[in-house]
Amino acid sequence: MSVGSERLPVRNPDPQGTSAIGIPPATARIAGYRPRLRISECGTVASVGDGIAWVTGLPSAAMDDVLAFQDGSWAVVFALTQKRIGAVLLHQTDELTAGTAARLAGRTLDIPVGEALLGRVIDPIGNPLDGGTAFESHSRRPLDNPSPPIVARDFVQQPLYTGTRIVDTLVPIGKGQRQLIIGDEGTGRSSLAMDAVLNQHGRGVRCVYVMIGQKRSAVVGTIDLLRKHDALAYTTVVVGEAGALAGLKYLAPFAGCTVAESWMADGHDTLVVYDDLSTHAQTYRELSLLLRRPPGREAYPGDIFYLHARLLERATVLNAANGGGSMTALPIVETRLGEIEAYIPTNLISITDGQIYLDPDLFASGFKPAIDVTRSVSRIGGKAQHPRIKDEAGRMKLDYLQFLELEIFTRFGARLESAMEARIRRGRLLREILRQERLQPLPPEFQLAWMTAYNEGLLDTVPPADIQSRLQELDAAIRNGSPALEAPRPEWLAWLRATLPQTGT
Ligand SMILES: Nc1ncnc2c1ncn2[C@@H]1O[C@H](COP(=O)(O)OP(=O)(O)O)[C@@H](O)[C@H]1O
Ligand SMILES: [Mg+2]
Image 1 (cartoon, protein in one colour):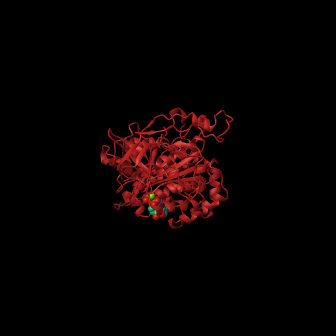
Image 2 (tube, protein in one colour; image 1 turned 180 degrees about the horizontal axis):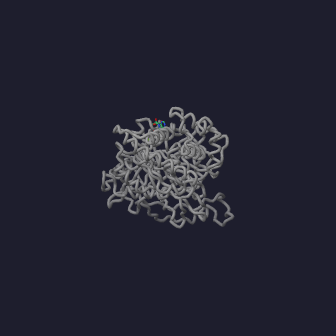
Image 3 (cartoon, rainbow, N blue to C red; image 1 turned 90 degrees about the vertical axis):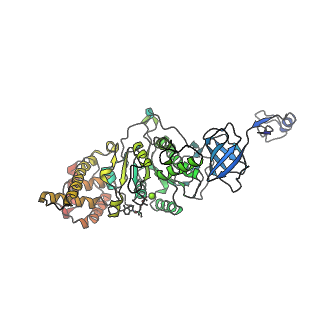
């Protein structure tokens, strides 16, 4: 405890005269000043290390309170015991040691939000990392917000196009959906999410890309890519890089969510990528173990499910009365050796509305994006899919799944009827079509066009080796002008026959 004198309540600009609002002159106030006791808690750092500090002497501290240290460091309260407080450091100077004084800052965590965040790279407590101006005068929003109540929500009914053939046709995503991207490291998870962000160009969807515990080279690469594809203008990048304090990595997804949430509250459509929540869970485990919280399964703290559920429940679509904004979330999670039954992946599978599974064997065999259609699902996106796309995708999917089964059968060297052989040939063609280089997002009209052409057999005579260049020509033709998505099938067929004359039937 310390004893201090009361601070003067208001500074008077003119020490001689009474101010316009009736404050007496400073001299009179000084004469009338009576010192009295002011009691405030003053804590002391007991120990510091590994991004946390143990503090004693702040009996009224509560969870999530911000602590300010005398040397300029600050932290947030993360664990309370009878004798001391465990705090997670969010800013640490070299002077912070045992014995440094600490006080309660009288606030909880918040970050700047709003228009000014567009095109910026920030850390999870709102400091710019791009050398740009700080956000001092802007509105702020608490990092931990309750998710919108049920009455404020609407159904997912608008499509969110990722520009990826397989996703937009077979695992479609709707605005306000939470779709997990799951797979081993190096199977193209970040690339898929990045393509989805790049595809929002000109579609009025604001994006947040959250990078958790990634190397600086990866961070720089991501920002570069966004800039190169004119995507930074509608995107905010939130970075808690590998070398940052564990507390910052832990806060990163909440910061990204808060930025998108404020845009959603203003009626905008938003897309947030959390890259990735496995690293986030590990950071949370590390902090929890350091702060002596009881470990649970795989040594993760018992509330890890609650933590991620709370984060992902904030993604939703608001109804018209609440502005009609939306937040679509693409959390990424890592598996080891394709094992999706591990603790964190199963948690996230049960929290989200579906998953896109990237398979290391498919990736190794050169099928990219390596999405395993049989293990990927979108539980609500189908309702948001355009009816024409949905119709064509239904037929195409049936063909594809039958082909995948047939192909296994042929591995045993079974002799096939010619009808079966034709099916397999068509299936192989389809697999060629579904390959897609990264950074080449495609418009929904293109998805409808190729599926219609495929379903109608207009591509059957194209040799598999030529199919990609043929599709590129189709894409160019679409961008030059094509029927609208709503156009009836015959109109599309006529257009396709004219555009793909070499293969016309
Ligand atoms: N569709 C694709 N076509 C070609 N290469 C791809 C594709 N998707 C990803 N890659 C490549 O695969 C590698 C791993 O991708 P990345 O997105 O970093 O994987 P992850 O995030 O799962 O670790 C990168 O070199 C990337 O360029
Ligand atoms: Mg990655």
